[in-house]
Length: 127
Image (tube, rainbow, N blue to C red; front, side):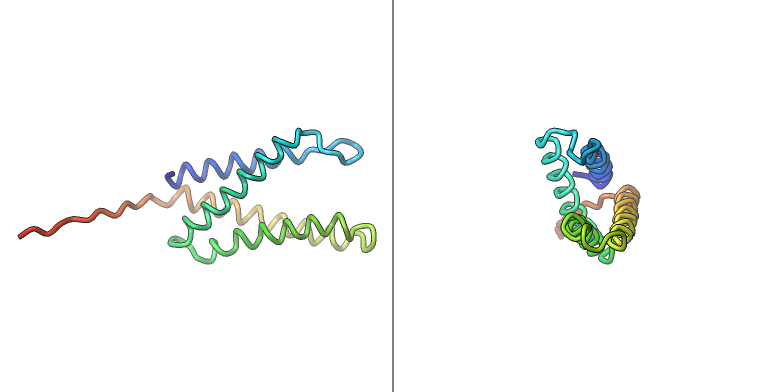
């Protein structure tokens, strides 16, 4: 997969995750579970592939992308558990984490889009 193809895959997985995040008035998901699972798998595959691909290009970003995603997941789960007890400070922290993860995702897509694919070729020196 080329870098631009991976960037397009990242955009598609992000759009799919936004579409599947819709809820009704009570808070129940409006999308079928299979679509939510496909969205999660696509996002996971993109993060793994982008991290591996970015390791040679930009090591800081290749570490920041999975860490920001992991912190977002942990904070989202903690919101469901802790929100009734502590209230709004966790929501503010969650929103900051969402912004950081979004900026990291956009930065990743820009780097992947701009970076040319390099193929190593071995040239035999025959004398």
